[in-house]
Every structure is written in C-alpha cells, then in structure tokens.
Length: 163
Length: 366
Image 1: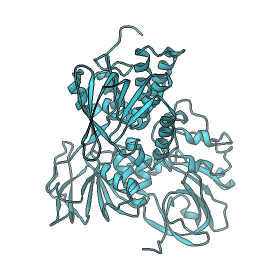
Image 2: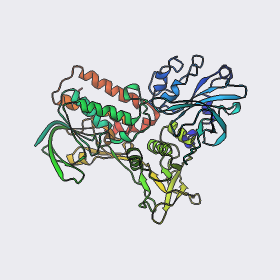
Image 3: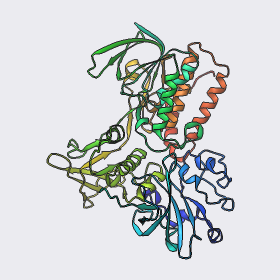
Image 4: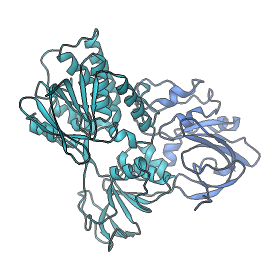
C-alpha cells in the first residue's frame, strides 16, 4: 500500500513504534523510514547512540528505544522528513508530537493549528507548544494533541493570514 | 587557437566534481557551461540530499552547488566559459563553442582530453493539447520557481511519481501553490517513499496506475482528464476523472544528452535502464575513444550523488592519463568505485546496475 499511496499502513508502522511500556516512559523517537535508500544522517546525528550506526549506507535505521531521550535532534537531520518524537506523558489528556516543518508561515507558539494525519486529512485541532527554528531550515514544531491522536497526527496546517 | 589539457563540458554536479578533482592534480582545465551560473540542476534543488556525509548528505542541493562553485573559484588552473554551448566536435580534437545571449561569439578549443558531463533532457508525453500554455516540464517549473521566483500556475497536476515529480510537487507546495494530484502510470511510486509520504501528509493524493489522457482549454490549460491505465499503459475506458487545473507539470523521465558523443564517434548503445542512448565506458569512465570521458546523467540517468562520484573518477583518470601524478592513484580509484558501489547497493538501484553492466567496457589491465 505504501508503495501505491505514500501512506504507511499499520503493518509498516508496527515495525517502528516502541512498545507501550517505553511509550509510557515519555518522549521517544519514531522513524517512519521503510525503504532501503543510501542515507545515514539520522545515525550520525544521534548523540546517544540510540540510532545504531549503519553497517551499510542503505540500512534501515535501527533504534535502541532505551537509549533514546526524545531530544529530537534527528528530526531536522533526516533528509526524508520521516522522523517524529512522541511524548505520551505530556499531560493527563494530551500527547506531544514533535514534527519536521519546512512550510511558511511558521505557526506561532500558543496558537491553534489543524492537525493532519498521514493522508493529509484534518483529524483534530492542535496547540503549538514550541517552534524551534533550525539552521538547516527543517524547523521542529511541537504540538499537543488529544492522546488518541498521537499515533495519527503527522503534519499541521497553518492558516495563512495573508491569503 | 585556445588549448587546454582537459575540456569539461557541463557545469553540473558531475562536471564541477570532475573539474575540481582534475585541477587538484595540476591539469589545466577549461569548464564550459550553458547556464548563466554554474551548478546545473543543483541550483534548483532546495531539498536535503541523501547519501553519506562524504557525499553531502543532509545538505540542500543549492548549498552543495555553492560549496563546489567556491572550490572551483579557488582553483587557479580552471578557466570558465559560461553562458556557452559546445556545438561541435571535430576529428582534430577541436570543439566549437558558441557563447553569449545572442550566440554571436564563437570560440574554438583544442583539448587533449574531454569530459562530457552534459546531463540529460526531459522527456515529453504525448496527450491531446500537450502544446497548450500551462504544460511545463518539471525542470522548467523548478527554474521559474526556484531560480527566478516566478509562480508557474495556481493549481497543478503533476505527471510522474519518480523523485523529480515528488520533489517538485513538494517545492510547489512550499511556494504556496496547490498540487491537485500526482498521477503515475506505473503501479508503484518510483521515487523515494519518504518523499511520497511527506507530500501525502500535506494532502496531495498520489494515483498510481493512472496517467494524463488529455487537457482542455481555450488559451491555456483549464482542465485535465486523467484515467486509469492497465499494465500495458493503455487507458481503461470509463475510468476518466476531470481535474480543474491550470498547470500540467511533466516529470516523466530524462534522456541522456549524448549528441556530442555521437558526433565524436564514441561507441553508443541504447540501454533502457539508463534512460536511452549512452556511450560505452570502462570503470574509469573512459568511452571507447581514448580522449573522451563521461560522467553524470549523460552516462546514465541517476542521482546527483552518483554523478559527483563519476565526475571525480573521470577527472582523476583523465588527469593521470595526461601524466599528472598522484601518489595513491590506484587506491583513490578503488575507493571512489567502492563509494559508488555502496550508493547503488539498494533495491531502487537494481535497474541502473543492470544497465551499467551492459554499458561497461572491460579493461584488460588495472
């Protein structure tokens, strides 16, 4: 399906999502990279050795979730914009999703945006918790979403005041 | 007449890399490019590249171009002839160059070695009304948007889900332009799936096993009709769908720009896996003629990262063949070839590898 639509399905995702126990501990990376391509910046960017060094440049990323702190440095390093950080413990009712964002305008901290799923469908509203401007221009946006949306939301839509 | 050690034709990733490498060995280089500025397609690439750190992974194409051009400018033994087209190759190893906006400057250059790094041209697609204004090649859309800051249209249908179709769709979205859909005649997305996913999650549908059938409009594109296709790429009746678009962007593959190699008399072969007619070459990127080397898309359609490596190999070997010395020549060659091999060691490169095998001239000694 992924190869036909560009949307990963549950069978793809279950290979890259940490178990419930790890998710319950707090922020952790999810790398939605399912195809062998020559690319290794994620492993090089990780300062904790959580993304294991590649033997072959074409390897798929392998994550040691126990070493991952959810710092998110790999999010902007990934050329494919395929890396997200999820914090299921963000608050009682909400989870935090950190995602890469290369569109303009950037959302504003504290404002509401639309939360989109992997097909680009609006699935809920989200609150912008943090906007990190990154030197390589893959900025990192942290949004809070209802807990049941944490594994669905992978993009945002910002209302452009100029349009 | 002007003379040089190595003439390099084309200032994209392959030609720039070849020039830097050969110049570092001391060869006198003349680099000829038809653009107003060097860099070839790199200067339109706003996305981060894949590959390893040695191949600028994670860096945007436009930044890679800047780095290469800076290096070129530091080399005193590289002469640049820009805004110029090489129009002919003659038996006495002379090439003719037409320069200037009006093409009224003609130069002749005698080069002991020539590295042809001319790249590729975009393929056209036959469909009804494909000459209406609003029908663009993806390269033209990139040039308008990313070089000149001109919006090519408001509502785009992208044809082709290879890497170019996916990347240009993303760039259109970044420019605030609506991408109505991407159609792909093959049953699977051809480009990197991470590119596909990042567009998909911004709401752009990708229709595989679909193609563009016809376009309507009085003075420009007003409507497009897409249709499902079977595995022989024939339209399936009653599956048409109309899309309100004003722009068609074609990203249906590239063909090597090999005219000069034909004219020079290189042994040529049609290799479908490499995108069309290419010159046969040995693993030093030397063609069937001792004085002509090739690198980049003209040698077979691939990525910029492999083009840069091929350029280095061609530059190194062309310079050494002229007597320029480097201590660890054999080791350098082996390492560059190893890097290339690693880049191609993935399922998406299978086709290219089959093609390269068909294009290889086996050398007797190393």
